[in-house]
Structure formats: C-alpha cells, structure tokens
Length: 248
Length: 268
Image 1 (tube, rainbow over the protein chains, first blue to last red):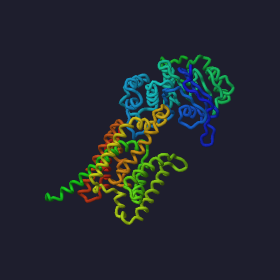
Image 2 (tube, rainbow over the protein chains, first blue to last red):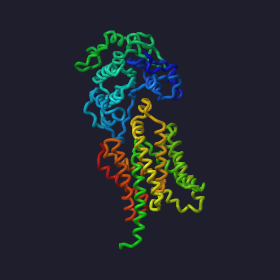
Image 3 (cartoon, rainbow over the protein chains, first blue to last red):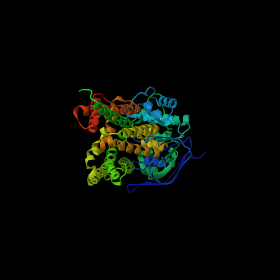
Image 4 (cartoon, each protein chain N blue to C red):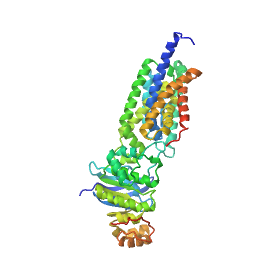
C-alpha cells in the first residue's frame, strides 16, 4: 500500500547545529512506528519536519487530503483561556465523535472539566482523545505519556495499539520508554541525527549501532525483554494493574 | 438644574459619545480576548502608538487622518507581528517600534501649527466631539469587526489553543491571521477618536481581563468582555459628567473599576 507520508533526504539546521542529517522516512497505513534515540537526537524535530512545523530541507510528500492527528510534546495550558474539555474537543471534532473519544480514553464525564485544572495524566488522555476524535489516518504522538504515571503508561500504550486496530490509522510515536515502545511497535527507528538502524524491535536491539547509542547494558536488558515476547514480567521496574498484561 | 433648552444639545453629544464608545467597546471585547490569549498586549499598545504617527502623516498629506491612522496601523500590525524572540525579545522590539512611532508622530504634529491644540485629543481621545457621521462610521466598523470575529472565531481559537496542532493538522490559515491583525488595526484606528492612542490598548485588554473570572468557555468570555466594554462607555461618561474629568480616560477608569470588581470573583 502507498505510504501515508514519505520523506526523502530531510535535513534540518537549528542554531548552527545539524539536527537532522539526510533522513529518509515512510509510514504505511495501519503501521505503528516508534522513534527512539537519546536526548537531542532529533526525534521531535523529525516529527515537526514531517508536519511542516520546522523549515527542513528535502521533500515531504503526504497522501493527498491526509488527515493527521497530532499530539505535541508540550501542551502549554493557558489559565487566561477558559476551556472545558468538551468545548476543546468540539473545537476540532463533531460532538458524537468527541464524546466517544473521551469515553474511549477512559475519561467519560470529564466534559465539563476545565483543561487548565486537569492532571498531567488526564491531559495526556484528553490530548489523545482530541487526536482520535478527528478520525485521523495518521496519528503522530510526541511523548504522549508525559505526566502519565508508571501504572498508566502501559495501559495507555495498549490503548494506542488498540486504537490503531479500531481506527485503522498509522501511528508514529516518540517515546523515552524503550520497554513499552518496543513491545508495541511494528517498526522501530533508532535516530541520532540520522537513522542509525531500523527494523523490528528484536532486530534493532541486536544492531551494533543500537548498542553504541544506548550502551551494551540497555541492549542486553532489552534483548532479554523482547525475547520474552513483550511480556512485562514480575520483578521488573514496571508495575502494572490487573488485566493489564502486554500482548504483542 | 432646570430643564433649559441647552440640555437637549448636551444630551445629544452625550448620546453620540455613549453610542460611539459603547459600540467600540463591544467590538473590542472578542478581539481583545485573542490579544490576551495570544499574549499580544505589546502589539496592541504599539499599534496604538503608531496610530498617532498615522494621524500626523494623514494631516501632513492633507488627507482624512482616519485614513492615515488606518493605513499605518495595518502596516504596523503586519510588520510587528513578524517579530520573534531573539537576542532582543519580540515584545521589546515591538515596544521600541511603537514608541518611535509615538515620538515621531509627536514631532510631526508639533511642526504643524494649526493642529497643535488637538494633540491631547489624539493621545487621550475626544469622544465628546464625535459627530453623527463619526458615530455612523464607528457603528459600521464595529459591525464589521464583530462579523469578522464571528467568521474567523473557530480558526483563531484553534490557533490560540495550540498553534502547532492547528498547523500540523492543516487547520491554520494565513488569511485568518492577517484578518486578525487588520481588525486589531481597525479597532485602534477607530478607537483613536474615542480614547486616544495611549489608552486604546486599555479598552482592548481590560474588558477581557474583567470577563475571565466569569467565563467557563472562550465564547462566554468574549460575550462578557463585549458587554463590559460596552457598559464602560456610559459608566465612564457618567463619571466624566459628574466630576468634569476628561471623557476618554474616564471610560478606561470605568472599565478598570469593573475589572477591580471582577477580582472579587475567583477564576474557575
């Protein structure tokens, strides 16, 4: 199938620093792609370049009329702008879709709440609800778990994976959390200004470039983790609630 | 006081002043909300300052000062909105340009013997001198500004909520951005006669600030701000009437009094 977005030879300079260096990228419908890489490796910049938010060189081709749902890394809340959750969602999507999306992210009844009064985790869910309510063909999520506690993280990733099935959209996401990211992705792209390596999670972590970027310890740890079939096991730093087991 | 025939004439200019300032205040409400939300107070102030230069240029060229004010306000708004934070913060850059306009306008007006007496009027407004034609002009401008605000509301709001999301999802519009700046400039241009170059930004900022604690949605805030802006006119004129104070600053003081009252209510 044709790619939703295809980027060729993307480069970006910011303040004299080469943030992106000749990056090629494509994502197909229904595919979950995760971008990983150390701080400053250009993950957010790549998303922004794909979305046309930063002046990168190279070409970005979108499928004509592509509907994108974007969850940015930062969503500064403005106390001077009164906004209920319901009004916020209806600004971008029709009422029934807004209500359904709010229920889908586990926040039914949050409509009358003020956006500025939400907790970090609630805001992350509302952001996701807004993005899916627009009926996107491509979800672009930049650290969608900022402010979500450890318990909520795994649940939210499963939600994102489930949404891909329900909506049939492609998902491109950036996250710091290597464990959960790798368990849910169809394809992992390891970025450090350029694409270091990419492929299925188990391929990427065996790539020497990955070990070089994250250190051999992380690579070994993840290798064991992925080998155990995405299963978040006991004794691990991840805590999860009942019925919250990860499946690939 | 007896019912002298003179009262009628006085009533007429007071009614014209109340209508002109009230309509302008109502139109300023919704636009002012966006000036507040988008942190554009400096821009509004500087566009107001540029208005004085516009008036001076208009008089110098022998055209209607309103045309001069409108042209310069539009140009100033379009140019200054492009300022970005750098080594010099955008607000500072905008403030510098605005004050250069104010100073230059002063100097130009001072070189023109015949209009020197009107200087205070340009700085603080001359709302009691509004003619019926002026009021009609303000009414048309206010109607256009309110209609424009309603038309572009959703796009402006998406932009104010999060510019990156609006652009990434293809919901932003350059045209809507331009329209906003032009309407701010129009507000400034017509406000120059009412509260003057120095105080017009007050009429743009104070009503939305006073409306904030009473609103749970952006639309409610805009409507309440329009109401407060409109109500400030008769309240201020009454204050001016009873204390013999200048009318324009009294209207701003009335808006400020409503803002002070709003502080008693905690924002939700």
